[in-house]
Structure formats: structure tokens, C-alpha cells
Image (cartoon, rainbow, N blue to C red; front, side, top):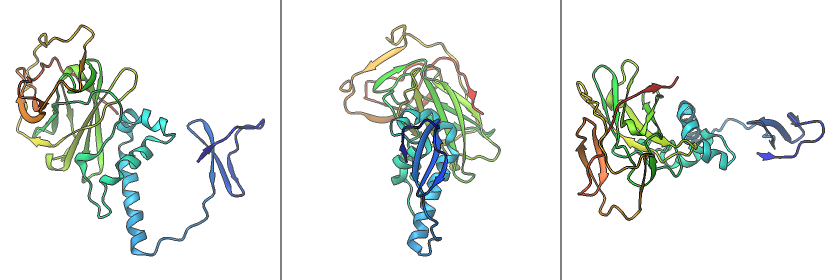
Length: 273
């Protein structure tokens, strides 16, 4: 695909000799015409074709979340969010059909990742996600948007929900029949400028019920702007350990032995259509 300067007659659309002209996101682009290719008849070609088709279908099912997490990165590479997802995640899809779900990235950018992520699924089908108020590195603000993507491996579709970083939690009603052993959770944050964070993965635990206590956040040394800068050398000997927030948020926390879980406040959920 290549961009070109339009003439006085406007953009060229259609096939002309070996070239095909069309509009992509409002831009006039052109590509070479691909002659008809016979259906691949070797086993290696069939495997390669099915591998690529599987990745494209996975990306198509995640369009609702990719437009938030990969918009900036895709624009810098002059490609769609789905194509950028395939390009950056293809090593996590095996040609035998396996997927390294815990390694997939649905977002990319300089914003602080969502940390301390925990996901629990009630028997009623309500999934509760919780996280720490501030990232372990980089810049984070309380009004950062947090996106939750829940993917079902059998039905091959997902659910997207949205909250705020300062809320520390969200809850979403999953479709009937979705069980913890068949779903994967991904969370990332975006700033008000549209920049995104890397994706955080969380395995889903199954519980009978989740009790959430809404307690106002205590003063934790964060300025009125809600912004916190964590220097790269601030945390040494990082370990993963399970902690409980004093107000009910629980989950995996990333930090040193002297760190404590940051308080949470309120709760809100805006499920996207």
C-alpha cells in the first residue's frame, strides 16, 4: 500500500492495469493488483493459511478494545489497529492452534500499566476486577480510563467495560454460561490525551460471592492533581505477592517488601456496547 498525490480529477478508485486505487481512512492509497492464486494444496501452505486466518479473526473479535489501546501505535505505522495487533502478537499464536493468552498485548504506549490486577467471577456471572490506584512505574493519574477486556476462548468473543483508575474496581455481568476456566481478563489504561499503557493480564478465579466495601480513599501522599511519578530505581527487588486492600480490594500486588496496597475509592462501571 502506498499514498500518492491526487490529481485535479481527485483520487483514483478501482483497478487500472496492475494497480488498484482505493480510500483508506479518508486517504487515497494504491496497491498492486494481486492475480488470482490457486487454493494452497500443500500441508505447509494450509497450516500457514489457517494460522493467519485465526489471528485475523481473533483481532476482528477484539475491535472494540483495540481502537482504544492501539490507535496511536497503529497510526504511527500507517495501518489498522487489527493489523498492528497481528503484527505485534503473531509470535504468541502457534501454528498448531495454541495461544499464549497471558502474553497478548491489546494496547501500547507510555502510560503507567494497571498494577495489582485481580479478577474474580461470581456464580451469578458477575465478574469483579480490582487494581491498585497507581501504577508501579511511569506516570499515572486518577482520571485515567481503565479498559477491561474479557475474552471467552470457546465462543471466541469478548466483553469490554470501562472505568477510572481511581475507582480501583469495576463489575461486569458476563453472558450466561461463561465460566472462569474459559475466560481471560486484560486491562490497560489511557490518559486524557489518548495515550495508552501496556496490557496487564489476569487469570480469573471463581468464587461464590464478592463483598465490596466502598470506603473513601485516605491520604497517601498524592497531590491534588492525582498524579504520581515513580522513578525507575525507586523499587528494588520486585516480587509478586497477594495483598488485601483495607477497604476490600484484593489482588496481586507488584512491589517490594515495604510497599503497602494503596486505598481504593468508590466504584463505577460503564459497559460499552
